[in-house]
Amino acid sequence: MRSRIVIVGLVAVLLLPLAGCSNIKSALTPGSKVVSQEATVAAVGAPVVGTLTGIPSGVPIWPGAKVLSSGTTKTASGAVSWNATLSTGDPYKDVLNGMGAGLKASGWTVDSQDIGTATAAANLLSLTKGSSQGICSLSENADKTTTIDIIITP
Image (cartoon, rainbow, N blue to C red; front, side, top):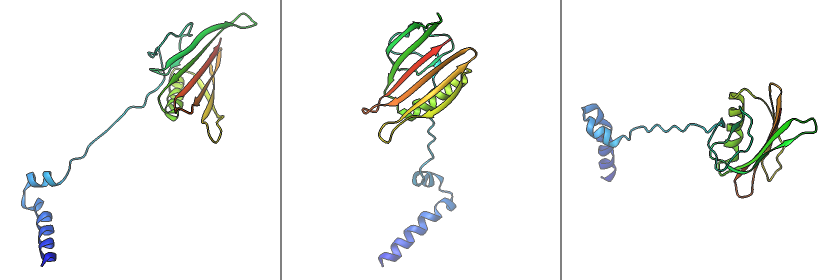
């Protein structure tokens, strides 16, 4: 007897949409939900927490990163080299992909080399743009923060 009731119930549920009961159908059928999230990308002039001292024009930075250090150094040839260390709570892979995309979008040529170990993710990006060269190292820390070290020379 129970199986007949279950079968009749299933048939009724399946036939409701055919009977034109759109309100009942929509109540029984959940609507689709579209979720989109744009990936973060490094950008020239991106806002950071702290001050970037002497940053050359055209260098994209990770948005919202905390500046741990920033400054310039005079090279032996007299040229001025810029460097910065930043930290972010964003996931390492997102930062790696977003820094690469932002650098390329800003006209930098980027060569990437995985320098991580079995226990710590790290990557070295070699950068060139016109006569400027640089490196950007990215590393995932034990607390799951990501450190970004950048050096640009003219």
